Image (cartoon, rainbow, N blue to C red; front, side, top):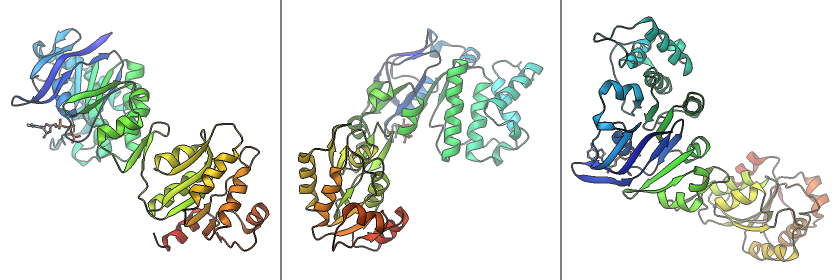
Length: 399
Ligand SMILES: Nc1ncnc2c1ncn2[C@@H]1O[C@H](COP(=O)(O)OP(=O)(O)OP(=O)(O)O)[C@@H](O)[C@H]1O
C-alpha cells in the first residue's frame, strides 16, 4: 500500500529550487534513505515531506490526502518527524518529553490518560530507554537523546517516520542501535521510515531503497545493492581519492602513489597488509590473486595493480609472467604469509623470481617456514612476526 507519494515535487527556498522533479513512492513498512553530498538538498526534501516547508512545485500525498490540506491532528497521527536540530527544552524529564508526543491524542490541556502513560512507557521500552525516564533530557548524551526522540515520535503511533540524519553525533554502537530500532519498526510494526544518512555502508546494509540526491535532482533510486555501484558513489560524492566497494560495503582510501611494493598474498592475508602499506603512502602491486578472494577486492578498492586469476583455476604461467613483469618496478616485496595450495602454488615460483632481484624483502612467515618454502640463498628478508612488527619496520622506512 502506498503511504506517501510525491508527484513532480520541487523543493527549495524563496523561489530558488534546490531539488526538482522528485517522484517518490513510499510503501507501508518501507525503509527509504536519501543519500547525497553536503548541501545537495536531503534535509530540504525531508522538511517538505514533513510538511514544514511548502513545495515550490508539485504535490506531496500522505495516504492519498494532500499533505498541506490535512488537519494538524490527523497529520501528527499519521506522520512523526525527528530533525537534527538540537533541542534544549529546559528542565524536563525524558518521560515528559516522550509523553509530549501523545499530543494528537490528548485533550486541550494535554492531560495524559492511563493509556497515554502506558504508550509512553511502551515507546521508551521499545528504544531501550526505560531506565532514562526520570533523567533530565538536557543531561543525556547524544546517543541517548536520539533514542528518546525516536520514542517521542513512536508514541504518536505514526504510519510514517521522517528522520534527518538520525546517526549524526553517534558513536558506532549507538549508530547501530538506532538503525536496528528503526529497522525493527519498519519490519515488525509496518512503519514507513524515510531518513537521510551520510554513511553509505549503513545505507547499503539497512535500507530497502535509496535515493541519490545530487545537482538538484534525484540522480538514481532503487535497491542499494543495485544503485550503490563504485562508479555511482564516485560520481555522487565526487570521490577521487577513495573507492567504494559494494562487495565490501565500505570505502577504501586510494593509493597515494609512493614507492612501489609487491605484495605476495591470497586467502585474505593481503587485505591488512595493503591497508597498512596504503596508510604509509606506498603503491601496491599484488598477485596472482584469485578473483573471488577478499584480497582481490580490497587490493582493487585501494587502487592497487592487481593481477587476478579466474576463480577456482590454477594460476596460469602467463599471469605469473605478468605479475613478475609488474613486480620488476617494485622496490620492496612483502610476503604476507599466504597459504599455499594446488591452485596458487605458482605464486611460490613468482616469489622466487621477484626475490632474486635486488629488493628489500619483508616476510610475515617465520625464518624456518620462509627458508623451507623458498629455499633461497642470499636473500635476507626482514622477518616480521605479525602485522604490528611490519608496521613498525615500514614506519621507519622512506615513503
Ligand atoms: N533555510 C534556508 N534558506 C535558504 N537556503 C537554505 C536553507 N536551508 C538550506 N538551504 C540551502 O539549500 C541547499 C540544500 O541544503 P540542505 O540542508 O537541504 O542539504 P543537505 O543535503 O541536507 O546537506 P547536509 O548533508 O550538509 O545536511 C543548500 O545550498 C543550503 O545552503
